[in-house]
Length: 468
Image (cartoon, rainbow, N blue to C red; front, side):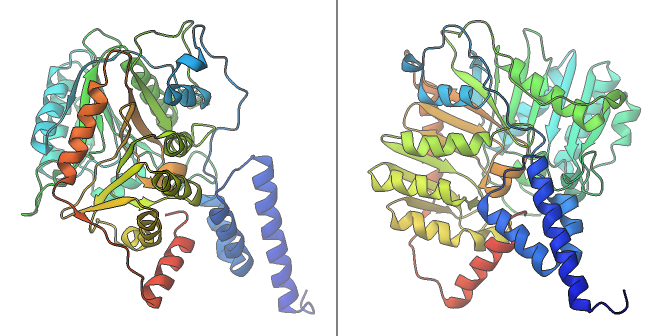
């Protein structure tokens, strides 16, 4: 071995690393965006000693493999079914169901009051999933309320993302366990029950009270459980965000999703967690108007990405998008640009400056491309964290997903799809009113050619940030 030149050994390491990447991708049926695949290959070729260990830790983004097409329920007629419902059914999502008493929270104060009321009124169970539970006044309020309910005999289960718990200094959860509640971290970034999936994050946000009863109630949206999302902190105003609550039969879908995530995170009894698949009813509900949309590694398809691309091509009049971070992949960006070019009014609402500077740099090229295609981009003066998509008067999507590669291809996300019915478009119009009211304080973005330093910086961040 001593007589073998170093560059020969290095070349052998590169070949073996590339071979490991290819074999793993083939055997696990891994599907990556082209930019991500190219970035991994270049990383492995140039720095195999760092890249290969990183790949084994972070390189896999799907737990679910492609599946056979699921049979659709009796009564489903493509010609009479809205395109959004048909698309989601084709992507393996559950059949839409009725909902009741939808409340869109006017601001953070109302959202906080609704959240604490929901927890306090529960009589049988509270299931709470969040990315961040911050160690501040708001987080303390939530934890105290959960502990009180656990001591009163209510089954309390708290599911927090592992990375989110490190980012936000989660409060001491031993208090909840000592009160009789349960708390679990979802895939800690320092360890993962699945090889290659340490970089996956549960970004879903929901609070479900009394699941399975007539009084069940769901609180959902984009707010993490920290003061900045509700009432502000450290003298700063609260972020603009969107959350809502509702009841009705559609909540069974949220209960099933939480149960699946809970079993996976807690590994109860060491059981192998099956891939999440929608169990479809025997018949297609005539009055269905909402359905839960799950996206992430537990779905064989990139659900939200596929739906958004379809929405851009299907939109006839107006497409409204609200997000804190806008770093779309080329296919979604092209679909949005083509919608604008064929006369659809494409409105994108996001903060002038977000809480992630890298994201603000990375979005520059996409914003300029969309603006030049005729899209209208609106920049809010404060931090804007709301996630909403409205298509014409037919579909509103609200929940936890951002319009960037991490949310659309890596994170576990949850959105609620509200469909217009033959009798009413009221709910979709309510979300449209929320969007336009929030947009009223924003400034129009004007595309300008960047300097060469910024242009190179944007390209470098887009290339290096494919997993961030």
